[in-house]
Image (cartoon, rainbow, N blue to C red):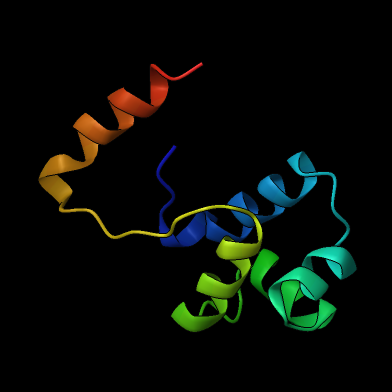
Length: 81
């Protein structure tokens, strides 16, 4: 599911939990502090550079989509197993 700014933190947390990682483990993989992971998951500190580090550690790809493509992308994602 594409994530909007208000739920990026929740999406990061869900991905971390799905990967079976603690905040400390994710922080070590991403090269950031555990406090940074906590801030991001809480919706603070949403710097692009920080999100790229964390997304990479979770094998995610952050991207910006043209608004007119959002429905198509959501449909494709919904059809995935």
